[in-house]
Image 1 (spheres, rainbow, N blue to C red):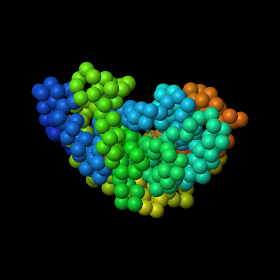
Image 2: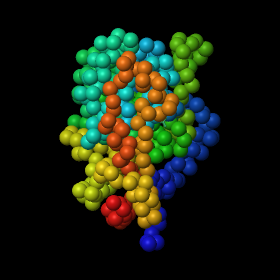
Image 3: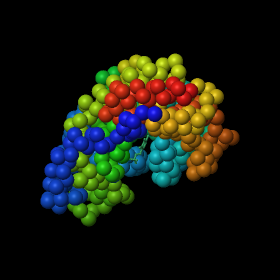
Image 4: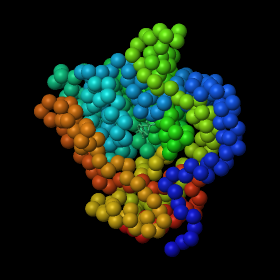
Length: 384
Ligand SMILES: *Cc1c(COP(=O)(O)O)cnc(C)c1O
């Protein structure tokens, strides 16, 4: 057994130590100002986020889930609408269309990139069109674990069928494709600032990025109860979806570290890749894509007892996690909507099901040392 400090799956303390004085100063300034809602720091952060992504507009909101919801509300997505999204993702991606009365149509994912499978997407759009029960309205592409989905292809499919393209970039802020950062792809991108994401606050937060000024204006309305130019004029049914000033000021401090942190994540991923290639399926290097490395997830060999591997890693001081143990179409809350999404029964989702059996995530944060990554590699190889 080693006596080194335990390895963290995510580590927010090392980062905090670097900027603690700035955080204290910034938080104190908000406490002094009393502008807890819509303070100037929110607008300052929005400008910096747009600059970082290279997009025209950023709208701060209360969470990644609310970012998805506001983006769909702005398109009037609701009853009778089909929203296509991967079956292998976080629950929020599917929850939002259901909350709005729309129907999620689960699409299988690619076994190498873990992102939405284009051929299966086209097949399901055609099935929904043929049936005529639901109106195809939107595709939510998820940049799972930080790897950008195939946005040029997804944008082309959406353009062909007149669909709204929404990027769920909650795990991938900082990622890029063909030199364009996420936030410039799709009609809009949803970010989450949940503490463990690539850019996280100390609570809940999110943002919507877009190049479309009209959409951004709608997002600003919707996050504030659909309010118009004057405080008590309600133009549309909105929600309370604002980003707190305190979270915005925390994010401003953290954003200054992000560029370097993304480089560290990439360096750590490269070390994992070298150490683990051949033992497990390591994440794909997709041509033209800059992975944000929100998570580092490997595919264990078929037939591996994952629980036993996790136990052995844990005994060696290496925490692991499973994102995700169950595909969304098998979740009790979504199974009925799934079954009803395509009459006669939707086609199976074999890759999503297989991945849920074999996926496993390793510690990933920018402050892992080379020695720690080495310990993870050794522990996992020994556990297999
Ligand atoms: C984290 C996450 C969300 C939701 O973000 P919250 O800020 O927790 O609401 C949505 N989609 C994906 C893929 C996520 O990983």
